[in-house]
Image (cartoon, rainbow, N blue to C red; front, side, top):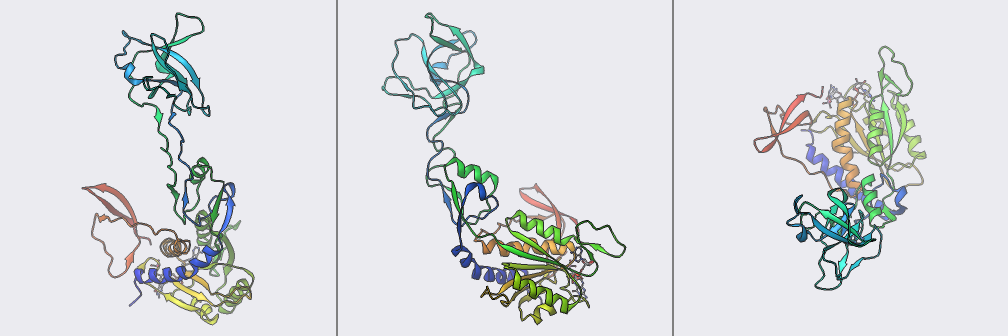
Length: 399
Ligand SMILES: Nc1nc2c(c(=O)[nH]1)N[C@H]1C(S)=C(S)[C@@H](COP(=O)(O)OP(=O)(O)OC[C@H]3O[C@@H](n4cnc5c(N)ncnc54)[C@H](O)[C@@H]3O)O[C@H]1N2
Ligand code: MOO
């Protein structure tokens, strides 16, 4: 009986874990602006709390919300403007004033909330935005007053210190692919350099004399456009991997061996992927070519659909520069089978290699009985919520 999907995953993980340590040892530090799409080599924690102080979320006036409790258009409450705070200003301290009206401070978005130094001075807990206030002339020239005609909520428009990140909080776990939103978070806490894992290099082949190279070829009768090469290259590049498309291998075992060997000598790849030529047909020559290169076949053919003929192997070191074996995934040629194997085997291997957390599976109910017998099925499904659980409906078979 064919190896189960779970057994295959365990073998893939074991191989990845063997290599993960070497990757960790070769970690490098990069400036933040060069770290996009790289993978964090260690956990990133915030060195500060941010915002560092309570700040205003609006342009307006810092007031005591309690003083506005009875405000209405018929009962406007008058506030004396004691000062102005802009973002980045030193702390503004409010002193007791002899004014008959309430005190407030004009405050800009991002400005630090004023503090009261004396215990009996009123605390300005919230911000009323400009649009909800009206400037009014005061009894003395040069003095500024505003009126408020609506009660303000306690702490409205006030961002608390540490609301974004608290000191020592984890911003990103080890093994995270650095995306633009991570760069914003790291920059906001003043991190300028980030330890990253070395970029993984993947060599990619398509196979089959029927294939047309993907760039600039017009359709030719009987020939097939290479769909797998561009798809796999794009998917891997999107997850931060350096992919080199090494060409289309012809249906000839000698040629395959020769091309694989010469590229293995020249290229320093962390992984080789091929698509096609792994099933049982006359021209499915990847298994023979690998065997003749002295590869160790970890598995070939597993209990999944699509993707059943997939192969995983390690090829002995050929380049004098390297001492280790090179892992090899032989994905099936059917485009959807190759995409499923990329998603559910190769990506799992790469995640494990880069110490990334595995995906958390969701448990869902099928809207109609599953026709899977012994093989795990990857099917095109639509997912929706109903009756307290996630329900999936099969949309189409892969093929
Ligand atoms: N007697 C058996 N026949 C087949 C079996 C089997 O167990 N016994 N398995 C089937 C399954 S499952 C799959 S999946 C396919 C995969 O076979 P191969 O990996 O050997 O793929 P090829 O024969 O080379 O190609 C299959 C199909 O896909 C097209 N192809 C290949 N590469 C590309 C590409 N880069 N871009 C677009 N299309 C591609 C190719 O032209 C063929 O049409 O085998 C079944 N057979
Ligand atoms: O792996 Mo295949 O034909 O089940 O797509």
